[in-house]
Length: 112
Length: 114
Image 1 (spheres, rainbow over the protein chains, first blue to last red):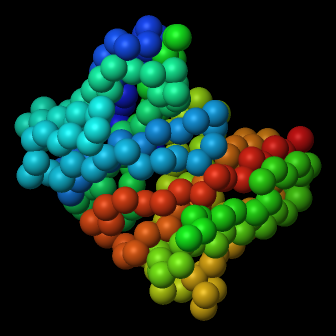
Image 2 (cartoon, rainbow over the protein chains, first blue to last red):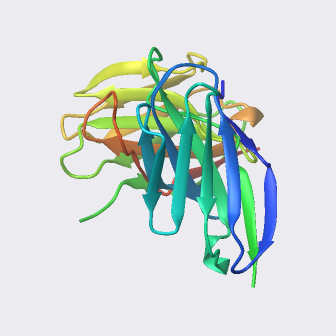
């Protein structure tokens, strides 16, 4: 089963604009991670935020985590055509027996 | 350093056949996990192995099995293939099992069952 739900399912923006994707989850977590996937190939790790952190930055990426609402957001600033990909949130559940539980993903299209 | 490698890249099988997928983790990584990704969905956890022992299993039928070898490489086996087994199979490696931090994914094996 999949815990996370990304919102929106698809997003289309112009190059230079910011892209925001949201993720909701259901259970207690150790950390939440965001991954990117290009054209149905392997996933690339973007950023990890631990349950006791509220915000984290990495280059053009900004992730927030609200454990009270069980939600996270990924902001990509000044988007580029190369950012076109599917983005997944994945949770490391505190009491789960799986390494990561993924959401269904957001398909981002950045138009040049 | 080489990343996670998987073989084969693509595979076409017919219903009822058996398939073996292979994964080599990053050097020094002792944990290997397998995920199934159906088109349009996120990856779903199948198995995790650490130090050659199964450490976790997802909600998949017994037709799915896996093992890890002394060199930490891994095989995923699927028997009696069904059309619904068509998917991208991803392998991920990491240093340890829980509170892993980052998992490193391979490029995947695209399995098509006809």
